[in-house]
Length: 215
Image (tube, rainbow, N blue to C red; front, side, top):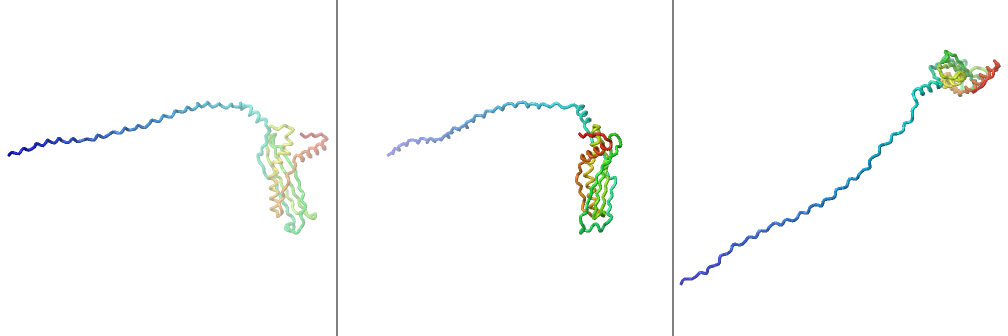
């Protein structure tokens, strides 16, 4: 007997399932608002300083010409001497301190109407028991030029201001001379040249019988 085979239904091909990639939405960065530009206040133009009126050169020159002028042209030692007649006995330390007398004089000589030589004469004499210990003498001079000085002020300038300028240098020389002679240095006190000038004018007035006035 013929056997009938049952026909088996054909198998349908299996469908392949494909997975689609899911695209995630990309988040866009939020835009920051741009900073607003700050307006700077406009700078005000600097005010120019007010210039003070300057005197003219002619005025300055005229004032300078009218001012009194005194200038030292030179200063120098004219004469200096130191006598130490009783040395070395006078230098012994066991003897009393000698008595010292100081003498100051002023000489002057006009070389022309605007130039004068002033000489400061200093003397120091030391004695002990009536015997000389030392004798120190100095003539220190200066050559001065002056201008625009009223006539009544010329003599006070010559006999007060000029010696005052010379004295510190003469004082130093006198101190060195006595120290080099073996004695303590003599340090002279600055004299009152104005008082010396007044005394000199009074002496001259008594001799001539004229009156003297001081400014």
